[in-house]
Amino acid sequence: MSRISNGFFLLALLGAAVSAAPGCAKKDARAAVKETVPVTVGTAARQDVPLEVRAIGHVEPYSMVALKARVGGEVTSVGFKDGQNVRKGDVLFQIDPRPYQATLAQARAQLERDRAVAKNFEVDSRRYADLVQKDYVTKEQYDGTLSNAAAALATVKADEAAVENARLQLSYCTVTAPISARAGSVLVYPGNQVKGNDDKPLVVLNQVKPVYVTFSVPESSLAAIRQHARSVDKLKVTAAPSSDPGSPGGAQTPQAGELTFLDNAVDMTTGTIVLKATFPNENEALWPGEYVDVLLTLATESGAIVVPTQAVQNGQSGQFVYVVRNDLTVESRPVKVGRTHGTLTVVSAGVEPGERIVTDGQLRLAPGSKVEIKRTEGKAS
Image (tube, rainbow, N blue to C red; front, side, top):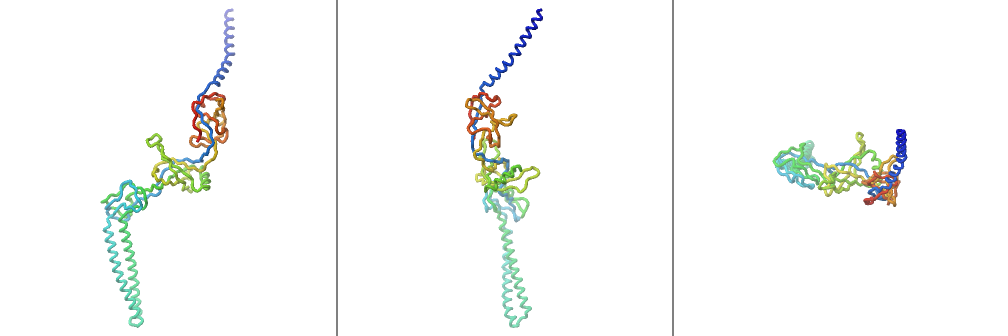
């Protein structure tokens, strides 16, 4: 009898516990809803947002000259130092000119000699012109003097060309800078012998004012680039060296340039197309060979609604944001997201300018949650 009573007693306790469980769960859910969640908020804003294409590029000199000797001989002097800026026309190397001076003098002497001979034949031809009319000389003799005079005149012209060539060879002994540029390392020092038109250069000059920045973009961007390039004179491009923001120099100021080249074919192996931008580079912030972050601006979208990118969440029904109401409760608002610009995301539908958007603390939120605003970030700008 006592066993039966104990069994009924245990069943009664179990039923009471089961019936009480739903009530406790509801109380816990209500408590969770009423719990205040600390959050950080930002503000949706309306502003102009540029349409941009980002890429990694590298700097190339505007022009590069591997300066070579045109004549052979001993290098007698070097007129610059490693890495020095040189101007067009500056004397960089001097090659021993004495052999070429002697050649020029010899050519000039030969010219004077042949001029004298030509003058003598010219006088003879005039004399024979009078004599042939008086039948003192034959027509054949007169024609011979004319031929000799013409041959002598041709020899004089050849000598003049030889003199000019000798003068040109002598001028090549003085090697000057063909462009204003920055010199590399001196590759040939005084005392060394050089050969004319040798493969080894004397120095390499890189023109760094202005410079090119070459970069590649996906072929999917080609249509937009071509479309906007037709509507403006030049598309704007900025480039900044890819430096570590934590380094002593910090992030460097982007340099402004213009798009000046669009390749005529897409690279089929990579699906990209090559572009070039020209930068004045007056401060020499861009250096040949270095990699830079490139930003090509195609156009500007006026009056776009933007929210902080970190406010946009992904859910089963798509992307949404938590909007803070005036009573400090949150509403889950589906949004239609466009593109991103820096730390901002363009939203074409779902929020209005001035609404407060949760940017941090979303993991603890549910629709209707009470929030405590710990910090308000600056408006999108």
